[in-house]
Image 1: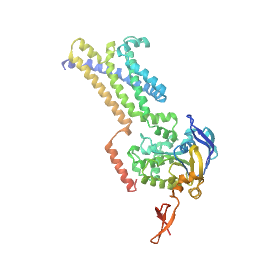
Image 2 (image 1 turned 90 degrees about the horizontal axis):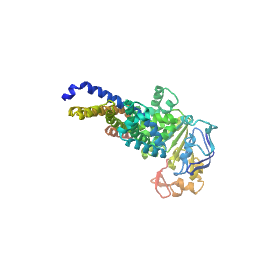
Image 3 (image 1 turned 90 degrees about the vertical axis):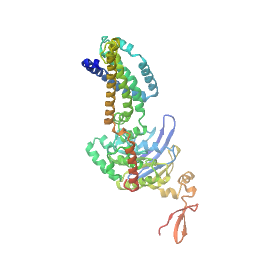
Image 4 (image 1 turned 30 degrees about the horizontal axis):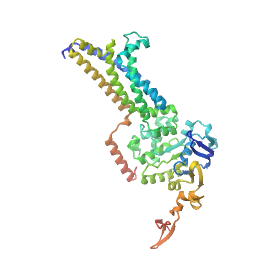
Length: 231
Length: 270
């Protein structure tokens, strides 16, 4: 606690750096994963290939990936872009499977009905398929968010500012308070992100909320309505 | 008027669902396509709004070949009601009903106001407008499906076994409602079912189909009952099982109608 109170500014600074490092990969990863997931879901061959390649990508250890990034990107060795891109790769690798599963979870009868109503292919994707895949996409995004926030700490190993600095520095200098602060702060960020995602889900996907009590009541009421001829 | 002219549909896997099908569907009447599963009745229905395109032959709506029309536009002017309602689970009842008008560019507010009126038309309480489909009973969902099919005021309403999944009581109610709506609105209804009783109840014209979309008989229910074209038709409508051969027995001064097995089915009104 003593360490924290005397290093408050540093911790805040690192929290902001950590958030700034984590958000772009989550957002960009999500955006890239949707079309890839669509392609994966569309054809059986592409599903196999895409999921295999991304599965392999996810198995690459993070430190080598961070270090090799400048070779691919031509960026300076200490540029945060290296970490951002690497984290985005992990995010995509995780998210594409959720995207493919989410799109696959949409009832084909509903898609057929949407086409029969006169949705064009494009409209059907944006207004029916994607929203209906929402709950599975959200579940996947929550995993991606937690994974990215945790992986971002490793950026400190290659000199990119994040809460990981507190682990490394605290471990080297043997300051347990610093290490614990790093861990707790990372956890707090992960939990806050998760809560935000759940909140966004509540707002965007109000139809998917399972409230069995309300449902049971509505069913009971509608039965009565039918029996009394009002329904 | 809808016209099928020697329509054949072969699916990519080689199945011939429909072969050389000819039929004229009169306007402002209900035509029922009835047959067992695999007779091609749903394929025929879906070819009308180009959900499926025929391999050969043509389908004309009021003399216009549908092949020359853009599928998406065509579908927006033909109502479609399917089994299990096919409602969009993420849209409230009112927005489900307003779907097609909104796709057609009608302002949302206007489309919703009209959707409320349609809930009245199909006998649903307006208080359901703000609910999601899963909060409704099967019968209510089916009514919403019908309201949605009517929303763009189409001349043609296609109904693909719409009442197959609801219980018999609700089903009977929905059938009566369909008869009332059709008579009131004067739509051309094309209805698909495997239930001959439903076909006779709803159809001005009944088309009995055999495998491959071959027509076993076309006619009014009375014509088909009076003169089944062949043994298949007789068996399909149940004439051979005796349930269509009724006679009158006098019981305590009342004329009771019984079938061939002696099972009473009704009372003759004087």
